[in-house]
Image 1: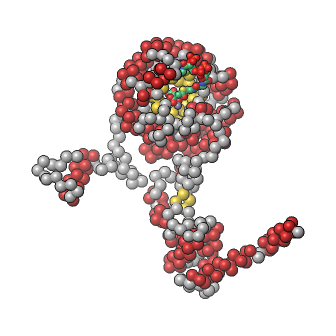
Image 2 (image 1 turned 90 degrees about the horizontal axis):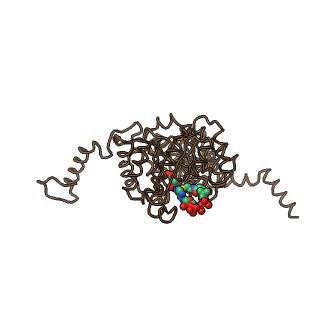
Image 3 (image 1 turned 60 degrees about the vertical axis):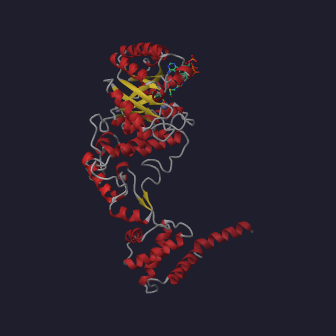
Length: 469
Ligand SMILES: CC(=O)SCCNC(=O)CCNC(=O)[C@H](O)C(C)(C)COP(=O)(O)OP(=O)(O)OC[C@H]1O[C@@H](n2cnc3c(N)ncnc32)[C@H](O)[C@@H]1OP(=O)(O)O
Ligand SMILES: O=C(O)CCC(=O)C(=O)O
Ligand SMILES: [Zn+2]
């Protein structure tokens, strides 16, 4: 940003900072843009092209996800996944090409027969009449056609030039349309393709009535700015819908999906837990998390969000993986608050440190207490839950003991409760005063020893002695 002409350049001076801030506010309305929402979040003013409140999911767990290293889906598993996705409410379910194998074809036909309530069925084929002829016989609602347009794929995958690709694409599209089935044409490896080639073929297929064109970041090389620019340019060239597919090799798959919607894309490909070739694509749950922040009411109106965890568990079990600890929304620590400063604020108002509400997804918030980073406000909340009577000074004293013990090893909630109960009882009985750390140590030790010599403990010891005799 340039300084005004009549002011000397004074790097870092307070005056300069004030001028820059003032002009930034004037230009953008606010440094973060737009108005604050109810949660105190600054939303940017919407771009007139933006579709962040008007988009659909093409759920590809049963196509891209089948390309995940661990995946082997029998029909029963595919049906279970398809039904769960339908229950969740995805608009489209994409299935592996029926040309892949006899079972793939039979599964595709069987899933089309399920009569799902909400989700329509797509299958995904090469840009080839042989595949198209098989696909239209399966009963799908739509066919997704793909062919590589980058020089890498033109030279080393299928060996065809752009004029062959265009001619064959037209033939396949017209054939599928003639059967009354929806058709999408996509360029694989779009971000390493020549822009002129892309725009030219997309314009051609748009003119002959393709329902959607697809942009695919097949190798995960694109960043959100590149995505925005390509999709925005494409939006000005075609009138049909625009679908986007992002691989996550460099960690941009969710951000790229969001940038695509901001630029006017209409459909995003996802898979449950992001499974797919290599490290996969935009995860369903991650996209939902992102879009909930953009327009919660829209997302809640479309999807049965409390199903997310179940869908993920079904897929995780089917491909023999764990749901990652830090998974969006459903990871075990996604709504766990630990540090004392966070815990205090969260207990006062969850919006302080949560942009998503766990209840929207049937999840629960958890405040972790028994560790060295805890604070007296978190401990106070537990005292209240346990219906104990301790004043703030006593709670701070008990907190000091919890922290001291947690410096040696993390204390479970059971440990914390035990410390608080002993503290409380000792205070009630006049055995303990604030600051008497050694007295508290002795009481805790007595309690532990009494547990060690409890009848159960004695019985166990006796059994061990008998077994070893
Ligand atoms: C980026 C993606 O994920 S795209 C989707 C990937 N999905 C799949 O590959 C589905 C599963 N695939 C399969 O079952 C098999 O690869 C099949 C049935 C599709 C093809 O099997 P094969 O005929 O044995 O060929 P193979 O897999 O070795 O090679 C791919 C063939 O498709 C051709 N091809 C590759 N991509 C395309 C395309 N998009 N459009 C048209 N032809 C293509 C290649 O030129 C090659 O043909 P060739 O017979 O002249 O060598
Ligand atoms: O059909 C598409 O658009 C995407 C195909 C694919 O899986 C990819 O390019 O990574
Ligand atoms: Zn892919």
